[in-house]
Image 1 (cartoon, rainbow, N blue to C red):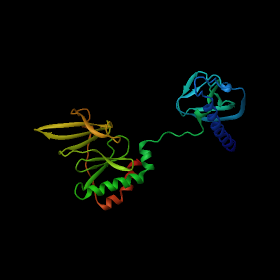
Image 2: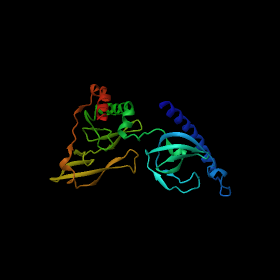
Image 3: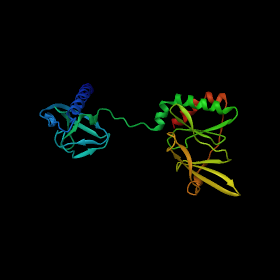
Length: 263
């Protein structure tokens, strides 16, 4: 059975490639061209039933007609039973009744898009190298302690130094997304994914609520958008810097990042 499915799957892949070419060649290049002769299928090749999966916005037709109107669309990752292939690139499918789907919209593999955390695990060596370069640069005369904490909400930890500089990973580099020269205490509410700053001004407690803005820099920067933190500060965690910025810690940074990303 597995051998049959493998052969059928391989055959379908080849047919998909041919179908894609047929469909591409069938689209009019200029308005004066006549519709192709094979817009409607003439022949259907019977095959043993094979399960494939829909891709995003997969169109479903009542007939194998390239110029027909879809009767509905399928979300991605829906199982579809294929039992025939038309000569103009459609799959005949069983969806309770007989329908037709263009070949390129179906795939034989089911793979969800990776999260940012999964992508970071795939590139953990590059992240480690970038963060190590940054830590070495700020170690001597700027910051001798730091924190690894996700404050952007994507699951990938940022570096926060003891001078309240925040750095994230972007395109094989550690880039700054927040910095202030004023004395401030940083807080983060994981429940709300909110970063805040707290300080005293003229005897009053001031709270700033930040949002990540990408209008100027592709990796973004934190900007204050409110001074009302009452909805967030009760469950917020004060950010401390428990890691020493020394060679021993930097040599172990790979393992620290892997442990965080694996949670």
